[in-house]
Amino acid sequence: MIISIVTATFNSAATILNNVNSILNQTHLEFEHIIIDNESSDDTLKLINEAYNNRNLKEKLRIIREKDKGIAEAFNKGIEASSGEIIGILNSDDYYYDNTVLEKITDVFREKNVLYLHGNIYFYDPIYGSNIRKPLMCPITQALPFNHPTMFFRKEVYQEFGVFGTDYKFAMDFEFICRLIKQIDDFYSKGIYLKGTPLVTMAAGGASWKNELDSIEETRKALKKYGFWNFDARKNYSLRKLRTRIKSWLSAIKMENVVTWWRNRKWGN
Image (cartoon, rainbow, N blue to C red):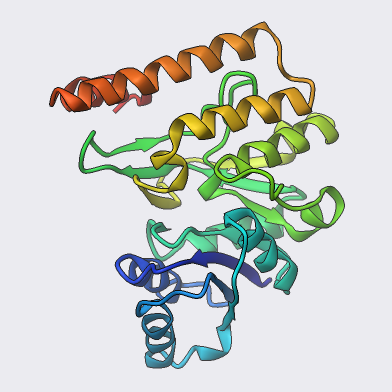
């Protein structure tokens, strides 16, 4: 069972080796790593090629280097170019938590007739504090129910229900999950939550993190599009905006420890 791993890159030299090495060190080697590079001008592609050459696994690497119009389009190019039965997306500054992740994923998909799999993440944030985050498994009107970086889908899901919406710059994953919840009966029961050890280490500072208020606005757009914009959605939208502004204010006055306390309380760390 081949797993296709899609990574979008743009001047990612500072972080890409963590990503690549976490894949090369997997115990399950039936994979292809598809790099969608937005014409990087640094050493991103050089580092990737060297890492694969050094391990004699160059046949597992595919690089598409061309200009794109955003992260969603890059993801879509990778999905369309994939040949695996299972597809995962691993951002260029994220990496697999240990070397057994792909083996665990494969075992589940071989044994279970499921559409997707997801798990915990280790959220690395040197400013506000790092922690393990379990999926919220909440209604979509409250937040994204899953840790999207840990989600692996059967390719048929993308083939039947479409890929990422290119009119979303930051919350394309939220829009995609809204679509699946709307179109697939009892979507939550169609997947497996792989409990225990995190699947992915996710680094703070990504596009949606840096543009958090814009990302929140895009979640509202998706909720309205799929008919989920109700009282609960409005309430949580307002609360998210308020929390984001408070976080920025606390950071400005050097009180990041308050945010750390809140996060540990929320995520049970």
